[in-house]
Image 1 (cartoon, helix red, strand yellow):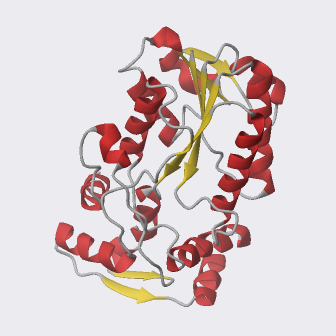
Image 2 (cartoon, rainbow, N blue to C red):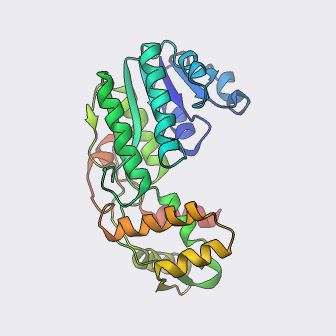
Image 3 (cartoon, helix red, strand yellow):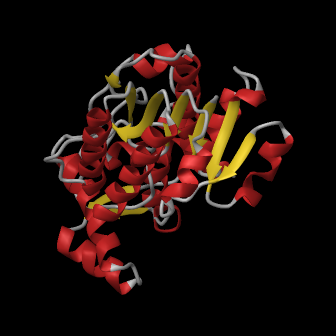
Length: 286
């Protein structure tokens, strides 16, 4: 039995779909906050159980019988994030899970300038301390994040963001396929994987050039001072913690935390990962 948490989210759902191409449905289970959102998976023969990171007892039940557990990292930051992960890891130990796989990030480090990367590092420490077999999937920075930052420029033509550095933007579809492949080949990686990255590390100036070639529209890149970007974000109703979190992405990129490239993702999926241009074309055509 392979159990996947967060199976109604972007990465978790894609991973379940790819996993069902590789193993029988009765070997797949999902732990979701709202089982109604996974009704179609239940109809396909997947075991669906309610599991809430704020209710450890529900997680123990959801993880029952798991030879492998894919712990998809929470969309939280700081102590709230690590506490949720700790609850899930403790529940996995209590449930007798054989191996835990965790969706970490390529920049995971205790001294990262990006809070989630520090959270990933702390979660990897928790996994290490269990004594169980574990794998940390060091995913490349999600291309969906870059597309969100670029969205306003579709109207203005101006990519007005803080100064940045290159990042190995990586697609959810490719990462889900690789994750399913790793789950299907138990024990393939012990501890952190190499960075699972897209084919190129690009800053926002380069992304603007790609957008221009794709659309025929002119894009300019304006480096907005961090303080001005924060003030603008707050003026648009962004909560201060979220504004600071966004700023830390650019600070970490300037610190070269997201630029590493590695062939492991391509080897896992048997082809070159999707380029940023391909992902932009798909997103903007939709």
